[in-house]
Each structure stands twice: as C-alpha cells, then as structure tokens.
Length: 306
Image (cartoon, rainbow, N blue to C red; front, top):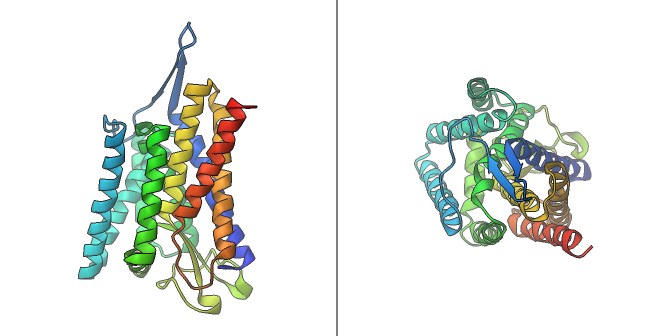
C-alpha cells in the first residue's frame, strides 16, 4: 500500500469533497431554461473574468492540450533556470483567477476578485499545509466552471484519454512530471493536495509545507496533483450538463447522478493507492479515467435501461 490508512483516507475524502463541491459550484453557474414545447436550453453565466472563449468540439480539446503544453514548457524552463520566483508568480496568478471564479458564483465579482488576491497572497506567502489545502479547494471548481461549457461528452472522453496517455509518458517514460512535482515542492508552490506524515503514519495537516516529496518514515509526504483533481471534475461536470440536456433532469438530480462518476473515480484512485508501492511515483490519471468511464457507464445504464 502506497500510504498508511489514515493518510489514504484523508486524500480520498479530500478528492471526493472537492469533486462534489465543484459540481455544486458549477450548478450555481448553470442556467436551465425550459421552453413551452419542452425544449431545454442550458447556458452558463459569465465568470468574474468575463466570457469564456467561443469555442467547442475539437477546438476546445486542442485549446486545452495546447495550454497544458505551453504551461508545462514554461515550468520546465523555470526549473532549468532555477527561477522559483517566476514559477511562484505564475502560480499566484493561477490561484487568484481560479479561486476568484469559484467565489464569483457565491458573492459579487469585485469582492470575489479581492478575496481571490488575498487568498493568492496567503497561499504563496504562508507555508502551512492546512492553508495550502484549503485554498486548493477553491481552485479546481473555478477550472471546471471555465472549461465544462466548452466540452461535449464525446470530446470530454477524448480529453481524458489524451491526458491519461500524456500522464503515463510524463511519469514512466520522460519522467519530467516527477521533476516538475519536486520543483514545485522545493519552491513551496505545489499545485495539488499535500499531506505530510505525522507520527505513527497519521496525516499532519498543520505542518509546514515540505520541500521534499519523498523520504522515510515520518518524513514521507503524500501528494495528489492538481490535474488528477481537475480533469475528473471537468468530466463529471460535462456529464451533469449532459444529463440536464439529454435526460431532462433537474440540476439537483443531475448533480447527484454526476457524483456517481466522482465516486467511481475516487474508488479507482483508492485502488491505485492500495496496489502501489511506497516511495514511488505513479501516473494517477489512467486509473482515474477508468473510474470516470465506469461511473459514466453506470449513469448511462440507469437513465437508458432502468
């Protein structure tokens, strides 16, 4: 087993919480209108940073993959140059925008942007794990709110497949994803959940952010990368919108059924943690993707065959 039972449980519960919370935030941003003839129209309110790109289909897929390529290349360049400050600046900007978008579905845009700046400052200046993970909870719903409206089920499936293939290459072949994770940890601006080990293998959520992601005994650290959280949330969000449009479900029921996808993704992640070896890096997305597809198969069966 990769981590102790308490640490594994903490990671799985955190993953599930952010998935469900992200779906809830997305539902608040979703507007459903039913015409007199029964035609259902689903739109999404503008975010606090304005309108989304007017793209769809393969363009959306290419847009996201290109963004990942550019972002990864920049961080690799910063790592090669040893420029921690440039990475922290980019990370600050991303935290500010994503958390502001999430907050914008609950409070006014100006207040959300102001609070987002405060959270980004707190995230990049404080080294406490509890603060880091709390701010991370607000980042991924913002990503879903931006990207879910750009994808259909078909293109969301291709997105997961592409990301899974990339994850396997980046971890097992080129290994640059491992280097990036270590670089982020050393800069203390890690995109994802971080759970340092405390005594007796228990999570130490109040500890300082570690500068190393591997170690022995109480110095070990459990991590879950940001992409492993964001991509299944985007897929579950697309499923939720699909259920509203195609199955004529209410937002509440669609959210509950889309949560099945999140539940299966969490189960797949748990299986990975149970089978993985200690102090080794694994690509999580292939397992999470398999869980997402299994969950979607259950949702599809419930709505079409039951």
